[in-house]
Image 1 (cartoon, rainbow, N blue to C red):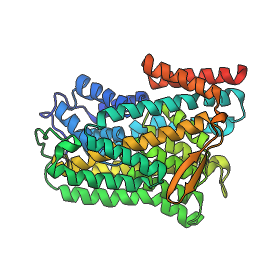
Image 2 (cartoon, rainbow, N blue to C red):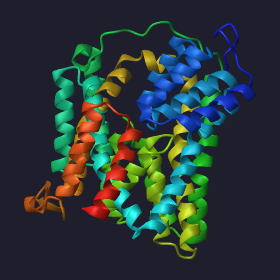
Image 3 (tube, rainbow, N blue to C red):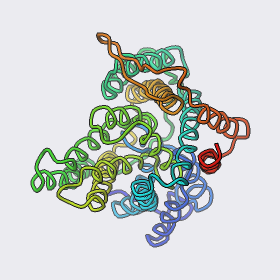
Length: 443
């Protein structure tokens, strides 16, 4: 097991000091992955000086190579560097847990508060905020990722594939990764690879033994709750379906939460029928208001799915179990990838083909987020939206005359707040929730 020494950083914290810092970060890490990563850089590199700039950037690159929430994985990796396995566990748990508790409280409020005028009005305004937030993420990620005509083409193909042909998200990720892997060796410029890695850092010996232990223990911990649910409740129970679905999601969550949201939203709405499209938009809006990873929206989905199919439990008990199980199978795999792969960081980071695969995946993610933006816009701004199939083609039919003018005005207002005045996510959500309540009462 590899930990950092005092010669590698300006200061090396005790485990207690690190624990309290990770708890603080977990309580204030609003703003999505970009904001969370910037905040960790400020605290860990600039203020505490617990990790130097090269190691932080190496850790960030490694986290972006893996499926799962990159900010959480960055925290786990830095915790592992500082204090080994216990440090990684403490960092990961404390990064997620405060937001998970807040999200659980919001899920309870949502389940029991529907029909209350103030709650319904706030959710109406939040829908408009979510639409603008997703568009803002599309613009931000697109500017960073689309560095060449090939990457723009991959983004366009991903959008066409998922929006018009209903191709599975894992297939799109796999195809993009393969394209980037192949092109990177002969034409790295086509996928934006111009720089070579800097200093190589040694992670010590015994890496394969570390990998094997982490893999075996991690897989056992990951699948134990699902196996228990299947044995005690039967393989067809909703909790088993929740565990299997979000476990699959954990394997293909490249590119951050926004990338996988379109796939998840369409699956939980159209395939599993756990919730409606407007409720999925509500869930994302609530997740935007909490500290912690945006992917905590999965907890909202798991809570409602179990809450509404509760037998043999009460709805509350089933919802709590569903939320806990969803959070478990979302973040245990993300932590497993870090513990298993951390000793191989430099080899992975220096591999040109793997870096090319990541660049191509990120480009495809832009197309997937564009799909999410269109999907959300249709469901927020119009009445009934119906998927229509003609052979291999799929599109969404809607009545343009059914435009919800109140929702359109709120969305335009949210866009002005976000793009013209450059206000943060929390401010946009809070203002739109208040305006939604006003619209609901006086509109």
